[in-house]
Amino acid sequence: MLDLKRNSKYQLVEATGKRTRKSSIYTPKQTEDFKISRSKFVDFLICPRCFYLDRVGGLDAPGTPGWALNDATDILYKREFDACRKDQTPHRLFEQHGLNHFVPYQHPEIDKWRDSMHHGLSTRFGSSNIILFGGVDDIWLNKESNRLIVVDYKSQSTEREITPYSYLNSVFKQGYKMQMDFYVYLLHEMGFKLHQDAYFVVCNGDRTPSGFNGRMNFDEYLIPYEWNIEWIHNKVIDMIDCMNSETLPSSNESCKNCAYSKQRAFHEM
Ligand code: SF4
Image (cartoon, rainbow, N blue to C red; front, side):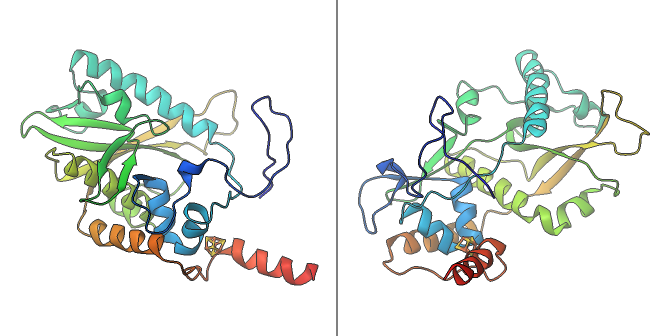
């Protein structure tokens, strides 16, 4: 992955491979508070070694490009749901799915909870110095039970049939479920009562027309997901143990990046 380092004026600058912001780097057994985002927690689940090299070693891994089209659908969904939030009316998708008792949740902090860069949902892990946080796409309210519903918007394009079963059992969607569980966990720890299902709002770009002609049509799906947060507590403990260790964890054998680095180091010798 080619990722060139640039300054705030987009000028190329030397890449050192190291982080400079001290607050991003954890010292094993430190007592000061340290924030761990949802994405860093998922990094730990995928490969403790890369997580450790990043958070403790301070290595600055190459990034990936943004997802501008996915961002665009997120922004447009946010506008639609915000209009319903303001009026406290069901969104058109709720009506189509017989969920007229759902409304987008109104709360003074909702914009902060959706701001993954600066705020997000957040909770201290027990009495530790670890603050877990993550920015959620949306939260709805079940007016009958007064419970909150965690929501994630997803954009994709496939010609395969989409059902709740096929969507949730795809090997590529396991990370989405972890992500949802984590947001539910945060809200639960913040003292809120949760509806038994979270929802993915999925829009699927139609690949079947004969040409683009300046527009793409989307089908929409509401995928209910019965969340499970029981696994999170022990995994966070594992993550904290990893951060407090002086030993580099083992790597993920299926990782092509690591395999590539090893091959490259061998060929450059
Ligand atoms: S296996 Fe992959 S994710 Fe893990 S340390 Fe190597 S490059 Fe990073």
